[in-house]
Image (cartoon, rainbow, N blue to C red):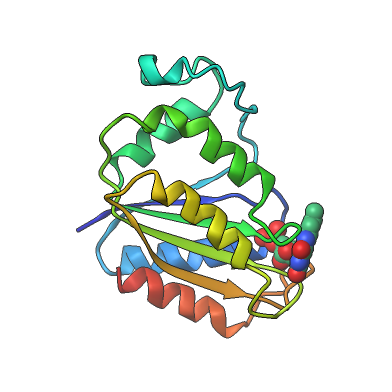
Length: 178
Ligand SMILES: Cc1cc2nc3c(=O)[nH]c(=O)nc-3n(C[C@H](O)[C@H](O)[C@H](O)COP(=O)(O)O)c2cc1C
């Protein structure tokens, strides 16, 4: 049994990437894993100030929701990120959380397998590539982990566009086969 954290970064109602995240989580739970899903909707997450105090303290000096999320990420074996593609990149809120979890950098961590779930209005292969590269930059800083899978669902612009899409089953299968 693996400890799995799914971080859903879209803030809108009827989010397509959140539905991918849900299906991934459901598949992982069905396979017997210990799964927690965190949505950034409603969370208080400020920008990184770059003070680097976290490198000594082991936590961020900003008292918002990040230290709690980071503690759970540190304990997880699997981290799945779900994000809408914004300007051919990951969402700003996902990048902000990555930056804010900089206190993890000098610490030991459990996570080994990282997954990326992306949605976009366009449906071409290149659309999510920069988001994957951006996440790879984070992964490169934690050499015991690797990108284990990236599922992209294109052609979904409006909320709920993903309903009935075969990529939902693919997300379930990805979670189920961790
Ligand atoms: C600020 C912004 C930028 C976007 N940039 C792109 C883009 O570069 N390429 C694309 O195909 N879709 C783009 N979209 C559309 C979203 O990726 C698409 O609606 C996606 O399904 C949103 O995911 P969500 O429902 O999980 O929020 C953008 C949407 C927003 C709000």
